[in-house]
Image 1: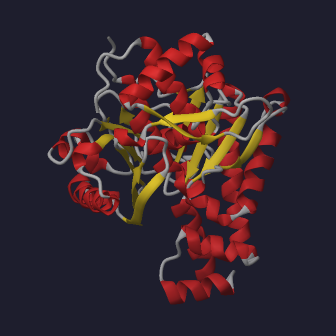
Image 2: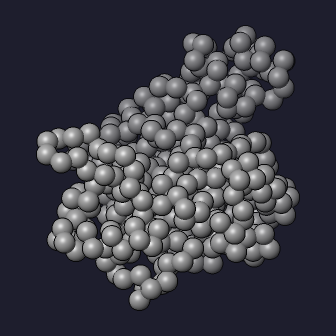
Length: 398
């Protein structure tokens, strides 16, 4: 992709077009604080270079109809990878983040980076072939991983859920197959990027909380993902909610992750099933083996009282943790994602009740708490945003 010699104004235009997900020339000039003359000149140059393209027409509001601008699909494609503790998803996306092909499957990060990344490389090549795209046409690769990431080096640092990945160079691993730049970040930061793009950067201060095998938080502050001094900002899963609680895999007692994440929910319901507190869960245990979060979610949606009690307790503990974060950060929105979204509204209601009860009135006056609108696609879309955003930032200026 030839982005050499771009002027500052042209890069600004590309950035606004990407984040707007389609924008008219007039709206672009206003967003970039350019005169119409300057904006039109930059657009004309970018159209000439094949970096932008015009698509269709907007719904008219009076006067001349306006073409919509987007990043040109001739630029190539993005590869997004969302890795969770128990599964992974790989997708091919166009520069405007339309999903061209994707595949998800179970995976275990405890197997280490070698086997997992080997499988990811295979899927990348298979999906590219399905789309009729060569590896050299890849603009950038974005990867989200469930652990603290040093963003500059792209390496995980002492990740509690995946210790074998500590310090492993994912970029070097993929370099043999792809010349495109590789960007690695924490999975919840990537989800936050996805939501930021979905809202076209209209919300400057919000949180994305993932509750799955672990608990993490992506922080968007003043329109940017906040990673902290060393990349560990948002590691809320190890905030203590029960001082004399069970020992967490991090070594401390009573962390919200060990008490309220997916494995804890499943473990408590397995105990309830074995104790005869729930015939439905007992039947699931007998038929399916050890209960998983999705089994508890299914039982909860069916109205099982024992499952509902665990879901409510988990939501209350997550809300207890979030109340402190809300008091500290004062976000406008909290979006909750991860496997827990399959549980349904009961978990969300318990989180809301706990947050509103424990937070200061001023912090919650306009606070909205909801599941992530992007749902299970948040990680994949966010990985695409990461790849495109950082590729744009690396463009060479004239």
